[in-house]
Structures are given as structure tokens and as C-alpha cells.
Length: 331
Ligand code: SF4
Image 1 (cartoon, protein in one colour):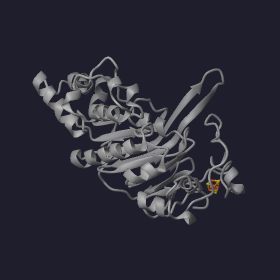
Image 2 (cartoon, rainbow, N blue to C red):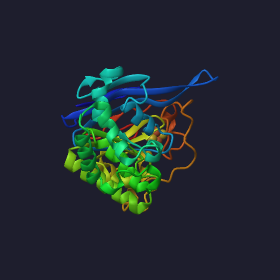
Image 3 (cartoon, rainbow, N blue to C red):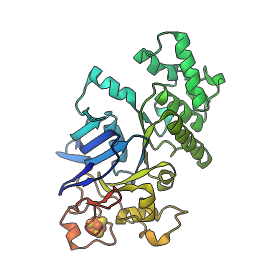
């Protein structure tokens, strides 16, 4: 059972029972220097990731989805809320206590070049987590593990001694993925992993992630601004707007019957979205500042269906009957 917390109460939604990661009412506020205010990047987000699921998280730039990824991996400390890993509270763990969590939950980034040390060759990049965690004491064992992992992600062993600058974007992403899976994680948070790649390469990386999910029994959180990509890989989808979740549902339901006006507007941006009757008007205007979000429904300044109540009252999260929910007064 999933409890969705919103500022106006909470609802319980039936979900699977093999929960890996659960966030409850997570907040991440960044103080704005000199203004005495906070940028509310994440403002009361709850979610639950089940074993074998791929939870897609979508929304425009600035909706808080990347901040959520960093809070879920404890790269960012949450300002408030609770993070549970297999039911254990990991919200405040520090130092060595956090290592088992960090071994099991990994992250893949948009541009692996940002996280691959240019002074390290492929062998060193993939081997480093094994050395830090002392998983394979012998060099021979580590080399074997590195080669196995490279084969899994489609990298030739001829690349062992090459450096990141010698590779294409797609190959660099494969190196980043190899480093993420070498310790056998359980959950990988993919933050816009294909946004910087050509469309043909995007498909190959998505297919690789799917293959790895099947062969390694992985679960994913897949963060993207691109609903088309999310549709391809996800089993469930969560839509974020201005630091909050506005709709969550199994993928088929969300694309067949989008409930929230913001979801419908996002769908209108998918070129091959077939059912035009389900899409909303395209989005206009800018996303408001998360330093001073609009009162009532945060989407009311851009919503074509906004009414008086929307400017005054925060809409509650209402169950949709498919295990998901929608935060709109008129869902
Ligand atoms: Fe639009 Fe009102 Fe629903 Fe918000 S609560 S999405 S403004 S109709």
C-alpha cells in the first residue's frame, strides 16, 4: 500500500509488495543567498519503486526531477521527509553506514564525460569501485570482472587501455553503465541518460538498459524530459511539476487516459502520439519560479482548465483506481 502525502492530506494506493526504495514527503530546499528565501526544488514528493519496475519520471526542465534523483541516491541531503531502502530508514545515514546503500543504488548521468575521469583508462574506471570496496582482492579476479562487465555492455576488450576522450558519446555512456553495474547493484537511477545522444544511439542505449534489466534483475528510475523515451522503457510513470508530483500511473494507463491537464499538455509534444483526443493544449508560458511558487494549484498560471478554486486551494492527490493518482481538483 502506498500513501501519497500532499499538503492537504494523504491517500493510500495499492501497489506491489516488493518495495526496494520508498520516499515519503521528500523535500529539498536550497537557500538563495542574500534573499532570505529558499528555492523549493522538491516540495513534498512521495514515491515507491518495486522490484523489476522501471519508474519513469517526467517533467519540464526545472520541475525537480534531477534533484529528486540526487536525493534518492543521497547525493543531496533531503531537507525533509523520509527515505526507506527495503524498509530501512536511510535518510540520515552517514559515512560507513551509508556504504551498503550506495553499493546497491547507483546512478547513470546524462553526459558520462562529466563523471569519467579523463586521466583514467577504461580498465581503471570500471575497476575503481571494485578496488574501493575490495570485492575482488586479486588483480586477476578484478580484471576478469572488468572484462565480463565490458562484454555485458557491448565494449570490446581492445578498449581496456583507452581513455574517455577516444570514445563517442554512446561508447562513453556504455563505460558509465559498466562502472554502475560492476558491483551488482539492485536499483539504478538514470538521469537523462540518452538526452545528449543521437536518436539512433539513444535506441541502442535504451535496448542495452532493457537487456541488463532482464539479465541482472535490475530496477530503474528513469528521469527524462522526453515522454517518448519514457514510454519506451517505463512500466510506471510519474509526472512532476514545480517540485511536486501531479500524476502517477502504470504506463499504459497514463498514455491511454492521461488524467492531469499538465500530463495531457506534455503528451501533445510527442510527435507520434496517436490519440489526439487525449492530449491537451500545448504548454504556453514559462514554468513559475520555485522560489515563489503560485498559491493553490501550482499549475494554475498555465492551465487552460483553471477555475477559481485552483488559485486558492492546493488540489489533493486523488486515487485513480489503477494504483496511481492525480493531483487536480477536477480529476
Ligand atoms: Fe488545472 Fe485547476 Fe486542475 Fe490545477 S487544479 S491542473 S489549475 S484544473
